[in-house]
Image: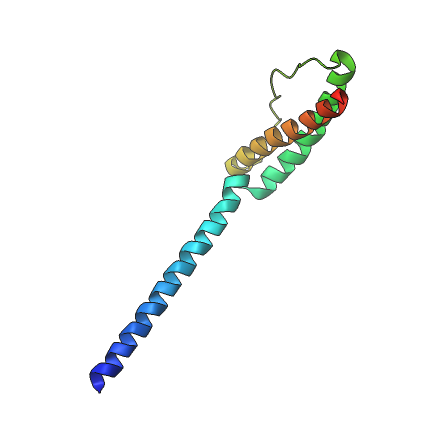
Length: 114
């Protein structure tokens, strides 16, 4: 009788341990997915993306007026970083700036070519 109770307790504990392991791995993967997109600072990425989007839109419209349908984007400008920003914020800001710049520049050029 005692061995049946002990075996049942072992099975229950094994199932709970397995369930907690699966949940912890799933949660870690979910949070890692955010870091892949944003880098180490989500705020830095979003700020950089919005600034890059503005700059890319302006440059795309200027290139449309000046060059028409020819391809002209040679280099994405380097954003201005402030000394008070942390290293993680700067890295995420620069990544966001590049992504935002390319998004809006491409959209502006596409609209020009229509």
